[in-house]
Image (tube, rainbow, N blue to C red; front, side, top):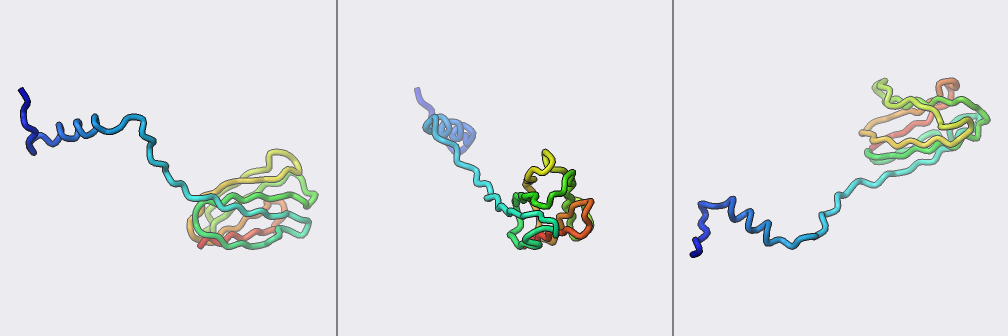
Length: 124
């Protein structure tokens, strides 16, 4: 004997609907925002270009060291004075690349031993 499904049994309706759904259906893809990429050359005179503007969000910064300087330490500082990042390239003279998730605002990437080298990042 079958019993009628009534609105008094919403949990049972949900279970039946889930059981009736096709198995092995692909899960919907999660959309991750794209990563913007900025390549900067570090020369004896400093960063080139010296400034960029990008939309707020994920940003990968790659610095190609053509300055001849070794033992570099990069520091990314927000306009508020907050240090966002401090790190070194993996090897002397190697390119340095780091991904950030930056909110709106102005940032500056410095090299600690060269106070006149500045790379400004304006996140819109």
